[in-house]
Length: 125
Length: 242
Image (cartoon, rainbow over all chains, first blue to last red; front, side, top):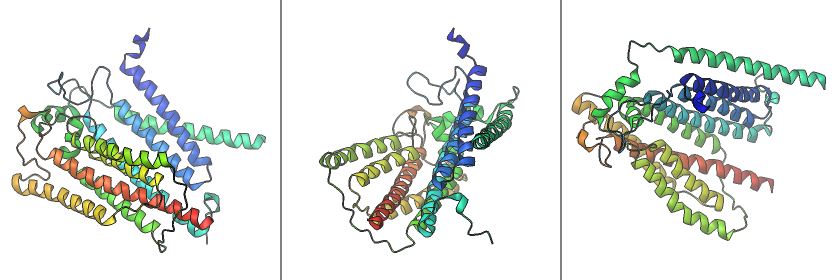
């Protein structure tokens, strides 16, 4: 019965739907939250959804991680290593951006005493 | 009440539709795979035996796309500089935080510190043999310092050593790339001997483990500095409230 899951199409469909739900959660947070820290964390959730989507769609059923060990002696029948390396880069940059944004938020809170994005109107005039 | 519900439903529908649109566009882009031509990953997998690295992802990160990793490390360095600039504008006077000494937390953090740092170093130096590498191991090392800060908020890191390690590792990274450029005419070229028969051993792969060790030192010191800045910020707020 579980052979149904042993196909590329099923796995890619599950990955697409679940990452779409995760992306929706992040986007909903960006739309509705008023706290600056919560908005930044919502952006991070959206990023995570994209990482999972990228890595997941490059998994083909029956292939293994691109690492040679005792049993495998050649680089055959392995998944594509390029998306994993690119997503590693993206994760580090996402972390840097999140930390920098949080430090901006802390500085803003220290200057104005509020963290509410609907009250940020310093540049209005 | 009804208006609020409708408003919330509007946001949910809007986010669902936008995420579906975005992921379908991305999915179309990712699914254009031609059966005739090989993808970049297949070519890299066939070339990968020459680098004598057991982990193909590591050889992509440090060798085939070494200049990307240089840019990535630069971005992390710039972010750390920005955080230091943002969180240290006012005169930083670290008042002593009055905290209750918890015996178990104090002793446990000191015991765990060595183990966590050893685990981080293990992840860094086995980056070319197993999943892991410089970035992951550096973040693991930074968690050890996070634990120390949680146990004792009055602790200080030695910024001289951290800055020295970060600058020296960054300079060495560029230097390794330039030596490759001058010696074998490829930026980040593998100028050290890397015989294929040694694949899977700890000393193998030429410059690839060296680059990952450099990246590990750099990321570990940068992450520790970021953790310290955020923790000290929290302390300061507590003191001013009291």
